[in-house]
Image 1 (cartoon, rainbow, N blue to C red):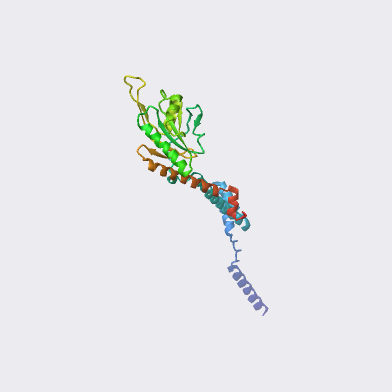
Image 2 (cartoon, rainbow, N blue to C red; image 1 turned 90 degrees about the horizontal axis):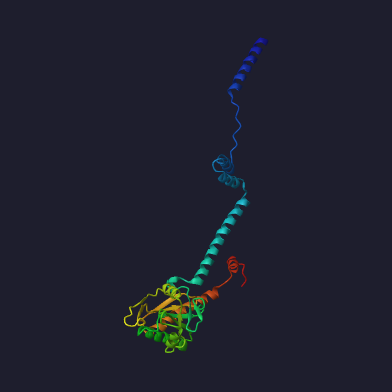
Length: 296
């Protein structure tokens, strides 16, 4: 009986051993990486090839919600400020210069410095601040120049008497040999008293002619060397107070058209000047206003 019990015990023990050996011990589950941890691991692997990019990725992966939010706000504020500054700068440029197609500034004109028949210096700088009507001619011109001088005087008189606008009418002589200060003074006595005649050296007059694209050519003298004619461009230029040429009158433009054309340029300039004056604000104040911080 004892032997039988011992045999059953041994067989059961062996069966338990076989069963325990057939059961596999469960392995410990792998730790699942979060999105940020995967991002950091990937950045570390890329560190050798692109260290800067890797640093940015590591920072982004380790940064908290507050830092990321702060970065988004900073970038957004910077972009918004750039947009505001661009808009304000664009408005300032347009208020100062205005669109060229609206105000019609011509690609002629430039700096010059001459002297009048009284010996006083007259330059493009000294003329700024007032309207100018400029003409190139010479005192020995038989017909064209006298006609243009009469028209210049008539425009000057009409603007002053009917519209209260004073302009500076100028004639730059292109005849440097015969048009002396005395000759110019005598010549001007036949025309409107506001007209001034300007003269200068060959270089100075050439510079003014080139700036205003005025053609001039000396004709041939026959019996008398001083008896010659100068061929030249017959144009009167309208110059605004900023020294910019904004219009012109060709020789065939009738007198009744010249004053309205001048008044159109005059009104456009004044409108632009008023808009610039009324809308002029300091850039800091305008930025504060955009933020809603400026007082009423």
